[in-house]
Length: 309
Ligand SMILES: NC(=O)CC[C@H](N)C(=O)O
Image (cartoon, rainbow, N blue to C red; front, side, top):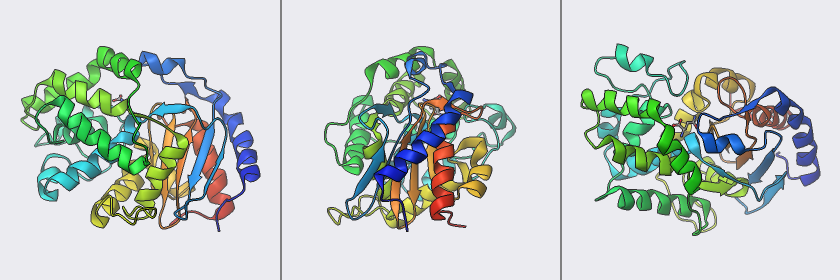
C-alpha cells in the first residue's frame, strides 16, 4: 500500500508546512538564502510510471548534498570498488556534514564516508575525464539519464555563489591534498564540486532518481540497468547510515527509508522496490535537513508503514 491520492498528499503537505516556521533557510551559500522558507512540495514516482505530487512542483532545487549519492554511483561504475573505498570510508561520523574534526584524528587522513563533504570531495576528485568540463559533462549525462530529462542543467548563480564563498570546503581539500588523498588542483576540484552541487531539478525528477535507486538501479520505463545492482545497494546503504548527516540514526528509527538530503532543502527518498520520493522544503532544522520535509516523511511513513526495519 502507498499513497496514490493527490488529495491526501496535499493534506500531508498542509500539515507538515506548519513546521517550516521553526526552520531556517541555509544562507552560508548566499544564493540559497533567497529561497522561500514556506515552500513545500513533494512528488512520489512509482515504477509503473504513475506520479503523485503536491505543492509547487514546478519549482527547481539545486541538488547540493543529494548529488553525493549520484557522484558516488558514477565513480563506483567507473572504478574498482576497492580503489574508491581505499580513499573514502564506510562509517557514519556523528559530526556535521562539513566538519573537519575527524579528518585530523584519523590515520591515514581518509574521510569516514562519501556523504560528508570531505568524503564527497574525494569522490568528485575520482570522476574521470580529461578536464573539469569533460568530467562535469560525464556526471551531468548520468543525471539526465536517471532523471529522464535531457535538459537538466545547473543553476549558474548558485554554483558561482558557492565557489566564491566555500572556504571551508577549500580547507578540507587542502588537508586532503597535504595527506595525498587527492592530488588535483584545489580550484579545479572546487569548480567541479560546486557545479555538481548546483545541478537543478524539480521534485518530480528527483522522485524519479529516487525510484531508480529504489528499483536497484533498473529503469522500469526502458528496462535498462542504469546503475549496477550492487552499486545501487551500496548507495542505498550509505543513504540509511549517513544520508541525513548526524540525524541519520533518528531518521532511521522514525522513518526508516534510505534518504539523502541537501542544504537547499531537498530530500530524495528511495523506498526499496516500491517508489521514489522527491521533496523540496528549504527551511532547515539545526542539522541541515528540511524540517517540513522530514515531518512530511514521518506522516507518510506512519500512514503507510514505510519503514524497512
Ligand atoms: N549539506 C549539503 O547539502 C552541503 C552541500 C554544499 N554544497 C556544501 O558543500 O556545503
